[in-house]
Image 1 (cartoon, rainbow, N blue to C red):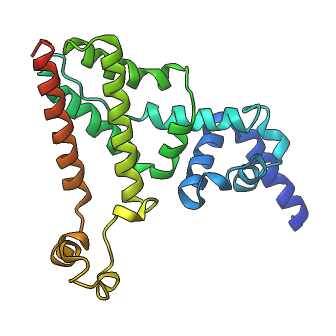
Image 2 (image 1 turned 180 degrees about the vertical axis):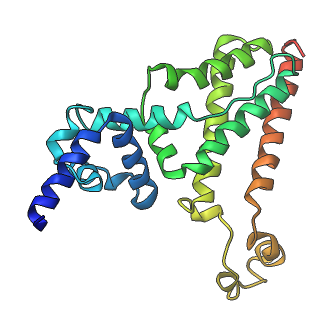
Length: 225
């Protein structure tokens, strides 16, 4: 078999095996490797070894592909919600479940937050979170604000973990060598803590602060405990 014939045969096989799921999986892998800006229909086609036009049989455009990526990531969240548990424990479980998938797909999770989803996969986490907050006794607007606060916290934690927001990420030791203790006494004295960070402990610390603040607000508003 000549090389040209072999290549044509492989391209044909790839085209026959092409599916929406395979396209989305390839896009997620590309995002995690090179970032969301690297995603294009032509780039995904190259990843799969098919012609770019063959992708449009499964995904109509890039916007639809990004929505599909978001839905795929969200659908993999493993909620272990226990309706019989106290609402504060349910909030903790849901936040940890979301962080787990975000930690597994950090760059793709940024895509999730950039899309406005209306599918079952996209709305299910929102529905469960809001139901938990409503069960706790929070009124509609307060429940939505609580949810947004948690999303903002999880996003911020994730950005720090992947190094997108270096300002509050662990500082390299050599970066503090030239700090003048007279000008920056606190930075100098706390340098051992500024140069290290256990992301799991940091997340749990912040999560506990948020839950405790919510519990105080719920008690003041007469929410059910």
